[in-house]
Image (cartoon, rainbow, N blue to C red; front, side):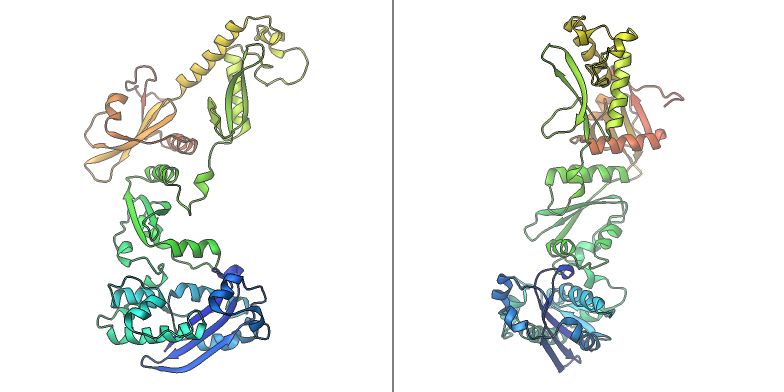
Length: 469
């Protein structure tokens, strides 16, 4: 038995919107044997544009029952039936959410007439209910009213039952089939083509624009996990509606997938990616010249369009570094904002500061040491390659860091001997470096020192491994 359903609502996602009308047609596989419909008071305002679309206004629902008052009857009609709707996940998410709020747990199989129509009647320009009905000769009366749309869906479903010579409906109802959980516009072929390897995947909208980029140790498994639940929130529902196509790029390792995801999000700026768009280290080391001509080092918050010498996750990390530079290069703690009071300079007291804060030291001498400290900071930043497994046995992957900056990554022959950075660069794809990528690579290097090849920061030749590396 099938329950063919259509609903009208106050908005596009269940968690913040109400139902204004429900229609349920019970179909025995041959014909409709029972009809049910009711207006519902959503207990919230109906937006003007939805009133214009459906013709349901607040006066019409003011005397209608609330959902809780009809929940038992709706549940009894749906339970133990196959839930059928045009874009089934929308109607199902609303009814399951509001039934749960009323104390009922809806657990039924479901089929989507959008997906079934694409398989059983391929070749139409559009599979929206209105355009599809026009193309196959179904009269659609009372468009955007629950009973009108449900009746048209029932006619369409009957047509699909009659034309389903390859058993697509039965395949969809197979418990092992996950097709009905997929977004309505996403071809199952896109899922079938996904490999079970590390990499990144792209979700495209109807215009082929990338709207989401994700990373995975197992691309197929990760993509399917996006569709394993049908959360009723706006973010999830908008996300699912936008997915029309999936492409992917294989990577050899999880780290490469993480890096490529960050690169692609920065390049494409997809609408549904949020977290990595915002990531930048919060603090930076800055150098500037004061009114007396002395160069000063300071740790401060990152600001838009600023160019720090170095960046940090925390202000404590920044001050630890600047204190180290003050000690090694005899810089003034006052000019570096380590000492902020008006007392005598602590550096002058222990003779590590030569009096720049009192203008006793000429600025050219002091500034030369400040610039020397920055050069030292750049010179001690490591240059290394992370060499790991490749996509095949005939290659190995390589990620290159040059003086603490991510250069790029790629694949080299398995039997290639690495001598220097220059020969390696020719075989790698250059990618932009960000704080997030740099930090991720450095953390990985600390955990996996056996995968590292170090290069001398001056000659760029391979640096012999020592017990400390």
